[in-house]
Image (cartoon, rainbow, N blue to C red):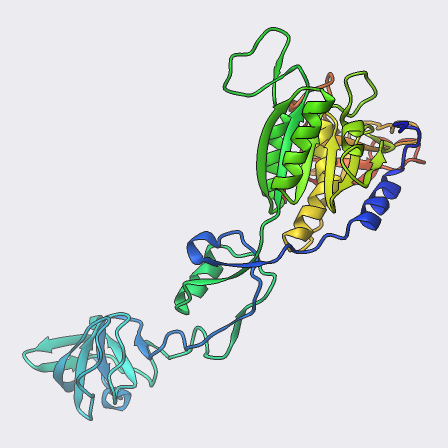
Length: 413
């Protein structure tokens, strides 16, 4: 097939991908709470018991009938008979009757007959007598059963991304495991004779593989699980073998390198040889990221991104990330956007949707200013490391002028 004969616009490319592939959750699995952090819940959780399950004391002190303390003060203390102690985790053995009290610690169940707790600071023990110097109202210093969570209450919903707080709720309800959406596995591989894996000695003329690591991290940030397969040469047979392995081991494949128009850029042809429909997008009218190629093989998407690290990571965020999030059933969150003023005139590439990396700072008037990050030479990874976000310039726009207010898409929320 003739590659790059027709460059799709950015909107056309997204539309074609959507026509061929409708992302959806990959199924449900039951896992324990220890593995549930940052997982998406696949069921509604309804409380099967009250939390707390009993009336409990919120202070160290003495369980009483509130009416026995009415009128008590430092000059006229209420005198009560002490009838034992209630500790945490113990059932109450002694009931409180008129004129009696039971010592209690924070978190212990309120004994039968008591309806308030006097703080220890406001009482004084003398043998088996307790002198109360401060009156309490009914229910004072008591947390009622179900005050936190009521039995039958829906506490968590399908689609919630669980953090430590929600996992604490599940544990409070006595649940050891729950149902979650399966995490999409994304195979990541790099191509190119010049690429060497980090950790090895760097031979002359070679560079370390940046993309496999930045893209694997981006997959994690998107709710997926990266499956790193390594570095492969720009050889048709080797690439076909690697891509077959990638497709067999994952739900999506991300490659970088080998998609430009040089003699070594064989990725589009390798993809097109593996199954129908094969390559569906081969070149997009965007800058950076023009040589981006997308294929659909055995109902699985393959994103072949440029070798330039900044281009690869940007195109991943624009095209692959929303699909991985949908497969992981992570609620589509629009990237955080802020308004800022342009520090210097920005020009798009003619006829291409242009994305310019910017960093944000405040000027003397405390206005948010967007300043383009120098892109440097091909392969510069520091461009993205220095950028807070990017500005999008439409194909038909001539330029963005100094002091014009624009919208910046932030990389981090």
